[in-house]
Length: 234
Image 1: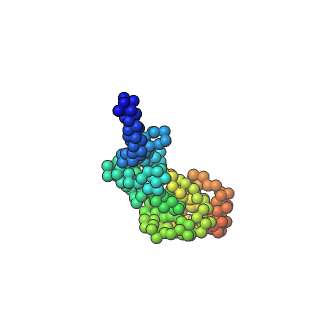
Image 2 (image 1 turned 180 degrees about the vertical axis):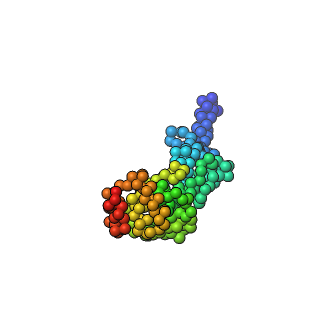
Image 3 (image 1 turned 90 degrees about the vertical axis):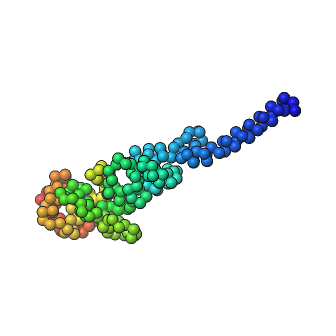
């Protein structure tokens, strides 16, 4: 074999070996928890999860992990390695994050809107601690899997009127109702004693009641006659 033929033989075999290595790179990277982009940049799956959690109140869910293109097995591995903690079914948090029950419930049941005494507390219209979590859900929502919240199925009008987002004591935003809607509810359902009612009304006044909004809600929710004195003495 001539020197040139010998060189050509070596070159062809090296080229085949190179193509084999390139073809194996994605699998090799996957086993190590990384992903190769077209630009050849390696992204660690665990880093991707941590980055998302750092930018989103320290939490992540199975659903979001899948949307990020990360296999959920890495969540289990990170829990086992004590990098993150599992706080509820399909929900994970960083170890240094205070477990926010209201926020965790919202992550797990995205259709809930906190109502009743829970809405009172979130609106700072109650001076009592939260003993029971209450929430509204759409009338067609399946509630059988919710076992930690007192839920009530309501029509679209009752579900959406006054819906807003407020901060929990841990600084996370959760869905609830604004103070004008809460005032309508406490007069409609007469769920508070005189002391609790006076505190709620005075707290709402101190924060600032939007009386036009209160009037609109009272008509929509058919409670105008019960709250008209609030509108008359403002």
